[in-house]
Image (cartoon, rainbow, N blue to C red; front, side, top):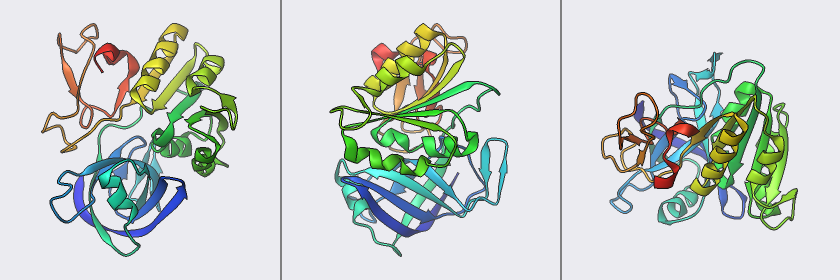
Length: 269
């Protein structure tokens, strides 16, 4: 983890309120599923950094195992949903922004010959691209509001994963939630990687448990520090699991954001 000033190389609208920002940033190692924290303003408003999943790793000199070594840049994929992301969307190439990262524990590398299924909703697609780049196999199931939003999956073309789309209004692909696609695709030997809104993740966890499949989820939570100090992103973890205390809590930023889906107390989320 390091804190540094990074130059913005581009900040492009992908579609509607989705943007891709590329930063000139060097680090020792990035693992798929990790995130960075950005200070979107030099002033006190907004005061807190904003967390963003690492969407793309640029110029890695070497890949070892599951990780990207010594990258020269990273990209984030974000959606404008509030003041912080609105400020971010107005940034121009050449401006500099403070970056803290990489942070958190990333995806768990699957065992060989497993049926890998990536499930993403909306901007939860972001941490899936580095995973797909490393796996070069499996299936990506993506859920969006409507056809226009599905343009953000273009970066997955040519990576060797099968792409299936679900839209709320049926304007492209399966009509309904992406979990409807998952129910059709899942097998007992599947390993699921999921990121998106909490209700979607809970539904994914239920489907995986019923099917006997292993499932990892990347939780989206409001974070203040990104390093487990402020305790603002605590989630209740299951006391039934070995290693967890009764009524125990874990920090999404430092213990996660990736968890085994059976570790989360979904009723308390």
